[in-house]
Length: 448
Ligand code: HEC
Ligand code: HEC
Ligand code: HEC
Ligand code: HEC
Ligand code: HEC
Image (cartoon, rainbow, N blue to C red):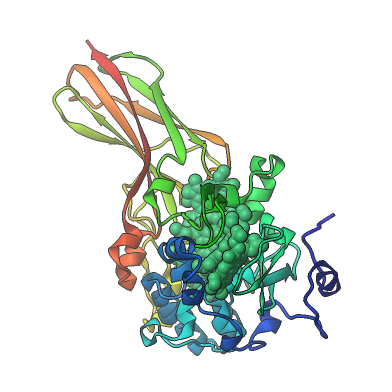
């Protein structure tokens, strides 16, 4: 049934690679290769200039050097493994996705980014274009099978290049390629990253709309300086770090139950949120870090502003989805060397706002951003692909409200990393900037 799922024997028949032994993948691939079996991205640049420049602007090229990654890897993960040696394997495993060549070369813990080693290449051209198969079903935890050499694998049959051989591999048109790194299971057996699994159970997989269609769109151009014009896969990989990709991903509308409301009455506002643009849940990926929240404010005819808290729905675990000033993330105390760490604010957004998220819980049941220390997941209150959720806000008009028009604004915001955690760890501000996904407005008339 799963054609993409290649056993080592099938790989031999699918590709022309002649191999004498089974190729390793996942943890077994640690140290199985040498750096110099792989070419540097700068080599590809001389011919694939545009693709190279696109890649340098994508997070793929920064998956090891990006400062927040460095902070989480060295200050939390590596530091945690120093205190709890059993974590060594999972912490080395970070590199299997973030700097695959270092992992394959056995260069773990890799040098810090400032040392300028080859670990800095991150998810490079060679990482993807030497993948010949997938070792797990479903693919996860760097289950790609790497076979470096003369041949670069891709999605176009019959191309010829003066620098290398090329070969068509169906995997380059299948989401399983991406799933190797975009699905992750931790040592507790918890799926701490499941973007491709979310996609698979959603409507886009049924319709054949793949990761590539939205993250590597095709446009007329040349894929190499000397090639013919053709439709070329743009190596954009734009996601959470691109406000234009996040913007508009969810559409919002809001209406009141009555337009004319007596000054001593109650109005109920409904907000519809439609995940119109993403092929997976929002947020996805690093769900332990990311939040989306709905903030609704009213302004009366004299300009006074009131903040409206969301109506609870009563589902299990809902407390995590309504902003509060509770503390969380106490488990960072261990790697940071702080005894009985009280934690930092869980949300850092206006109290009473609805948060679309899925909490990650440590072995003591406290919220954590350390995905490797996640023993269970809380309620999944995210927006599934093409799902519409309705939130209501029941508002008893304040006694001193001015007569006349009251306007309402609903803002749906996105944050890559909850701000109190970012501040605590000294993560650059851009990781916790507030990105507006969408907004909606409506009004009522307050009458006597
Ligand atoms: C000397 C020029 C040159 C260099 C250097 C070069 N390539 Fe190519 N490559 C080409 C040409 C030409 C094509 C074919 C383009 C066409 O006809 O569409 C090609 C095609 C490809 C394809 C498409 C394969 C397919 O079947 O879809 C991939 C992938 C690729 N190159 C990867 C790389 C990588 C990775 C590097 C660096 C390690 C690299 N190339 C270096 C010239 C080059
Ligand atoms: C995350 C994996 C990944 C990385 C990193 C990556 N590629 Fe690709 N590349 C792909 C996939 C997948 C395709 C085929 C996409 C499709 O056809 O929809 C592709 C297609 C190509 C093609 C053929 C484009 C076309 O449509 O004609 C070339 C050439 C290429 N890549 C070169 C490179 C070079 C050079 C780099 C580094 C600067 C690079 N790739 C980095 C996954 C990757
Ligand atoms: C070898 C592992 C690997 C493979 C294969 C891979 N990715 Fe990624 N990808 C990563 C890592 C690691 C990051 C996170 C970079 C960071 O922020 O540190 C990432 C980030 C991204 C992002 C988010 C960028 C952002 O702005 O936050 C997108 C989108 C993405 N990948 C799409 C894809 C697609 C589509 C494919 C399949 C063609 C793919 N990836 C294949 C490892 C991989
Ligand atoms: C229908 C279009 C569509 C498809 C299909 C799609 N995505 Fe996305 N993706 C988006 C949009 C829009 C965003 C920005 C909103 C967001 O962050 O969820 C996004 C965001 C992302 C992010 C960044 C999320 C974050 O919170 O850091 C990653 C990683 C990603 N996609 C990977 C993938 C992978 C892997 C696949 C295939 C399994 C895929 N996407 C399929 C549209 C799509
Ligand atoms: C199975 C592959 C995989 C493994 C293993 C993995 N990551 Fe990631 N990591 C990713 C991908 C893919 C993303 C991007 C997801 C997204 O955009 O939301 C990511 C995102 C991140 C981010 C967030 C970056 C951002 O842009 O906000 C940090 C920090 C991070 N990883 C650190 C780690 C650490 C530390 C480990 C080891 C404990 C680790 N990762 C293990 C694939 C992996």
